[in-house]
Length: 309
Length: 270
Image 1 (cartoon, chains in turn red, purple):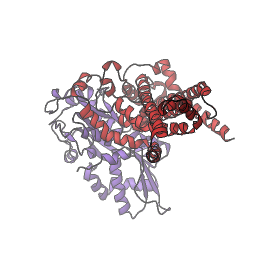
Image 2 (tube, rainbow over the protein chains, first blue to last red):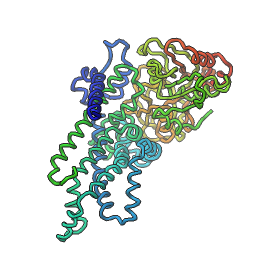
Image 3 (cartoon, each protein chain N blue to C red):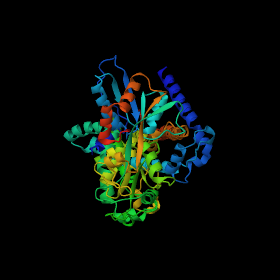
Image 4 (cartoon, one colour):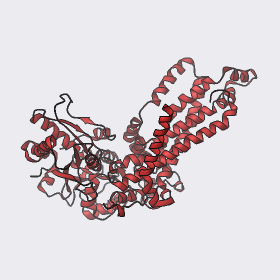
């Protein structure tokens, strides 16, 4: 009963968002997803559309924001996966009992810190530091006619986001490693391999579905993260250019979710609101794909595990 | 004249409500307001004075968000009064009444380490339009690096005023950073030696205000009309104001007490 209600609710939400978003997609076609022009200028033009609905302006090319979202989310999830698997292995197998007793609650606490706090620290401490001390004047001048490097950047976004999502992943993976039957790793050790190897080849392998689940959960949180990224990763809708070398990491990148938050004050203007709903629709679809991909990956791996899935 | 605000302003980014009066007696009418981050500090001071002078005759709830949030909220009936720091636009929902309550100066600000002596309209358009990208090309600048521009998002009344007063039809440089409140522009400019931006006069502490056409952006010059960068503050209602809201707006526009509150940091109308 309850789950049926939830399904209806989700269906209603999807229909609502898409019906609101449709004019934006319909007016741009596939070019909606492509590059072209400056997104902030396009948003301002949509915002300043004439009052008659016939002459609404809808032109927008969202690629810089899609690209930024992929870069920040992807970068943070990959980094966080490595860090969290290694930390979970340390906590489960190598940490002395007193250290473990402190680490586990600390990680659960960290996982519950609201993102806006990370955002504030990033905005007031990390961004000015990176802008004033890490990025050199020469680097700033090298791209000054294209974009300004003020410190809020791709790299700060990735780092802060990694710090934000790692604790959840560690918590989930730790639980999974704990639930790997003791006899499996004992068996490996009995065959003469050391603790590290037993954990890596048996424990982590058996826990792979949980690692995928943790990564999916973290990706979902990273995709939807708006406030923090809007504060630290740049308020300019710009597609960081890998050809710029090291400067690439210092270029601002505004994700889709951050764009929605930054521009929510313009919702009253109808075409502008519809454009924001189109952003929301893209987020909704990508999270749906994400959970599907996670499910598919777990299916493929299920042959390595018994029971828990 | 100057207030410390960055943290307070940042805390309101997530539209956190600041409760001005305890909601004790239920019989009192309550007035909810939302909108411009430029008008909000004035509205807060006025509300405190109003509550004290009329014997706690009303409860106030004040939210921020930007002029366009205020206009949208009041049009949808979510709040009693929307605060706007921009003039009415043809694309605004019908049936709204804009009550002009004060005038305010929009200041061009740079970092304290970069005290630009003066700037004119052409200079502003060159810097904010992206034509001039290095401080070495700006007369009077003590900085060497590229210019970092901080602007407001499209829904901001301050952005609207800046575009209208200083930029005309010229577009802002595409690489500029957008912030969604006065406080965030203030925080960015005060911590970055290469920064330039624009904020409401109330949010200029910690930054250097650049004189416009030789006239410093101060309350005194704004009051005398010498400073060219002034715009209007509005209280917006759906239809003509009624009941408690009507009395409150009447008090703001007519009473000497309100006038003196406005005169502390803003420009009274009469």
